[in-house]
Length: 220
Ligand code: NAP
Image (cartoon, rainbow, N blue to C red; front, side, top):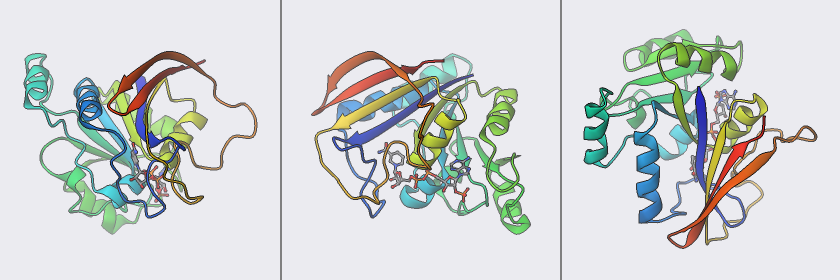
């Protein structure tokens, strides 16, 4: 399995404002890059916090990229994965629409009624007692043939993935904007590390739109 985390942050490291509303941090050229990255992935992964804040569809927008996927014998769209311990994903969320297959990773604490609602729209993967056990959930996704995962956020999920040692690559677009706010989400939130910090090796730096794309690999 290969896991790429891709996110856009402000120059001060925020993924959005304290209102947790989706913000434009990058521009057209970076949107196109993110679309290509989605198209090259077997699945696009987010935490339920991002679903509740932004209601993203996580689909590839460029139809040529979808056609190329079909030519490669893949589905037109990559699958979508929501990490959602308690089945809080609303049944009418865009990520559950018919445009692509969706997996919702739950914990055993997810209420049965909510599970049943979600089961009409998505494949359910249960791993972990109170919170999704990411190692087990990702192992199940791999068994389903989802090998190249692109994680789009948010900060809680990204931190947990680093903590679990599941991240192979990090692509961060840094935009020319200051958002500020101690409660605004950052690239890696969670409890934070106090030692054994994950270390990265810088692979490339590229100017895109009015910001820079930094690509790092995660040291093993
Ligand atoms: P998030 O990371 O999308 O989702 C976090 C939630 O996932 C947790 O609260 C938890 O809820 C669930 N979860 C289940 N198992 C987990 C585990 N093992 N580790 C971590 N989380 C787990 O939410 P967020 O950090 O609040 O981020 C949302 C914000 O990020 C929004 O403001 C959105 O706009 C922004 N965002 C920005 C970008 C960007 O590139 N700029 C990309 C994505 C999102 P349960 O306990 O209920 O399961």
